[in-house]
Image (tube, rainbow, N blue to C red; front, side, top):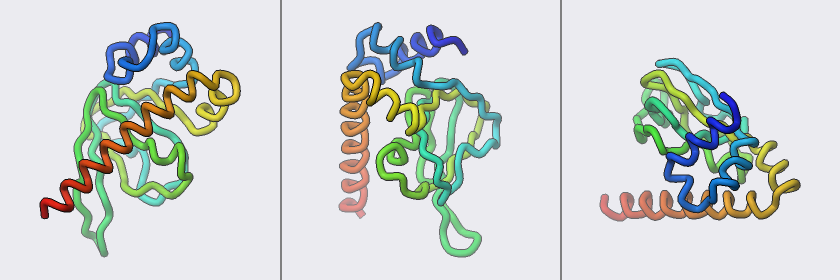
Length: 150
């Protein structure tokens, strides 16, 4: 998928709200479009690769391993959602597995490309990092709220 098309897809997502069109075009340069077929594994719990994805099309299921053969579904995500952001920052093993439950089109941003952006375009990287920090904070608050409600 050409860079301009990736920028247009970003522009139609919730990610666009903090970015100008020129910034989205620059941000798109650092991403790669990938397709994942129904049943395809994006990553497995305990994997160590560092990348995040924005879902453009399709649905993904997040699954957490349990003891033995047990496990449970944590969430189901669709277009506009993102997955894997923590790996960009903490370089820890993945905390869950992610599987496509339909054919998916994703925009992938690796930690290596984020570090390149930070070096070449620090203002753009800063805006993106603030966006990611806000997203991770919202998820932590939601998870804390769920724990308190139990």
